[in-house]
Structures are given as structure tokens and as C-alpha cells.
Length: 275
Image (cartoon, rainbow, N blue to C red; front, side, top):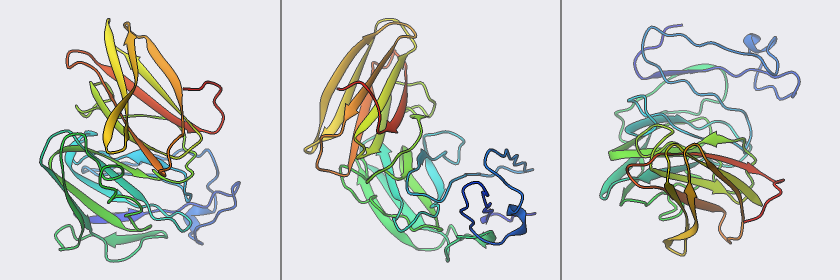
């Protein structure tokens, strides 16, 4: 099909093995768990995938095709009855973040829906300083996004955006965390995790003599919970134990500007090692 600027199109597929049909769309009748799909376009598009559950989270790509930027569009996927969390991490002081609802109706079945990125529908506006976010520091982003709607996130300085289930009982698979330079290798990383019993975090060093610092945001300030001296391609792997009365935890991992790390996170209920 053809999409005009500002339009979106969603496809919902029935997975017969899971027996969770979304609708009676004939495109879905022959699709099964494990199928692969290819999306092609003659212009730049943003494509996302999600499942109907309350367990998943991910990072948004910016309009400039990087994990850090000043403009993002997000589709809040359908869950059961829980609104989607949105977190924005600031790397500079005086970063103004604006979140707009840009769809007039919920898109919960296969359909095309026009977006209006110019409509005046601000649902959140907040100025963040370096290291501040919308889940822990201000908490505006908790359960902010309504399932089936699309939102535009704009910032006056480059930010990274995490969305999905960042509170309550998430059981999501592992993923790499974007760094402050927009790639998966850098010197500052921010991420939030929900209140699972255990969370696995792995830090990989790309250079010799690299000192990595792990901090958790607690009681209104960043608190160091670990320091690691790593060699080239050496990793530090550990499990954090949930010990907070809050529903979410936010972490920062950093190193010197001349060094580079990669950070991999996972959430599970069954890890052997303690903090």
C-alpha cells in the first residue's frame, strides 16, 4: 500500500499456536509462531513490532536513525489493562521534553490511521537536567501512554527514550542499552527496570584499563553500587536483587570519555548469583 506523510499502518497477526487472535483479518489466518517478515519502502519509514502483553520494553530510534536524538514517534502497543510507561533520559542540563498525542483514535486492529504531528495535544512537558528522567526523578512517565495510540516526543537537546513495561512485573528478554553517543558502545548509559526479583546486567569493555561505575538512583540521588576495573574485551556480569519499595529502578553505568563500554540487560526470575 501507499502511505502519505504522517500516516501509519498496523497489521495484527493471529498466532495459532498461542491462540490469541486480534481480529478476523484474512492476512492473519496462515501466520504462525516463528514466521519471518520483510518490510521494504521507497522512502524512510519507522517500523516497530510488539505482542499483546504487559511484559515488554524497548528503546526508540530517533528520526535521525540513532538511539539518541531530539524527535521520536512511538506506538503504544496493546496490553491487558495497563498503560505503557515512557522514560526519557537527559544528557544535558535544561533539556525540555514535550510529549504529544498525535492520533485521534486507538489503533487496536489492522487499519490505516492518519496522524497529525502539528495538533496541539501536549500531554507532558518537563525540563530535565543531566541525569534526570521521567520514571524516577519526576515520575511523569509512569503509565503515561494509552494502548493503541501514537505519540510524538521532542526534546531541546539529544535524549534517549525507553518505553514499555518499566514498572510492575515485567519478564522481558535481554537487550543492549544505547549509550550517550547513540550507538551501543559509549561511556554513559541510562536504563530503567521493573520490580523483578532479579535483574542481570553485563558490562563489556572495549579498551584496556577501563573503570566502570554502576549507580542506582535512590532517595533522590545517584548512589554507587559497584566499581569494576576491566581489561580489553573483559566483562563484568552480575545480578541485582530487587530491594526497593518502588515499582521501578533506574541505573547509570559510566566510564571515562576516552573509554568505551557496552551494556546488556536482562530480566528474569531465576539467576543464581546475588549482588
